[in-house]
Amino acid sequence: MSTNGHQLIIYTDGSSRGNPGPGGYGAILMWGDKLKELSAGYRKTTNNRMELLGVITALESLTKKNIPLTIYTDSQYIVKAVQLKWLDKWMKTNFAGGKKNKDLWTRFYNLAKDYQITFQWVKGHADNPLNNRCDVLATTAADGTNLLIDEGYERDLANG
Image (cartoon, rainbow, N blue to C red):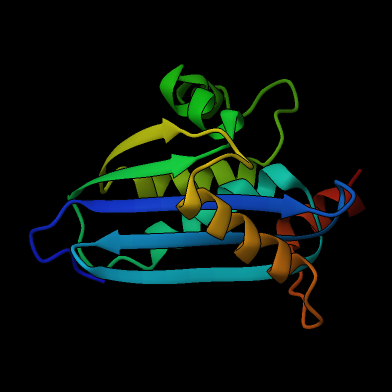
């Protein structure tokens, strides 16, 4: 996906039924008058992993790098990790202290280097139609029948 000179806007959301349980993410990418929706469901995961995977999948779908973009999310977990530099600390200490979701945070960190990202927190389940649409995408994916395996989560479960 290219931006054709427009500001790229991304909305994301994640959902989990049970936490852990079946989960899904939804993402909407907008540039100019174009819109693209992404979603997928997983058989066993957490809401934070799905929030992160929504952002990661949106970034991985882009074909142009080094562009400014704004990501809107209702995840304080993501916004604070980036804006308060928690992620930088986690990366420097190799996630010392048992910080969760190392696999996804590392994936995001490596992707984010290629973009000029601004994160904006939005209140979930409120009056933002794009955030609400992402919620529908995420919950519909979580409730689907052909759920994927969150290999990072299930590997961590197996390893204790």
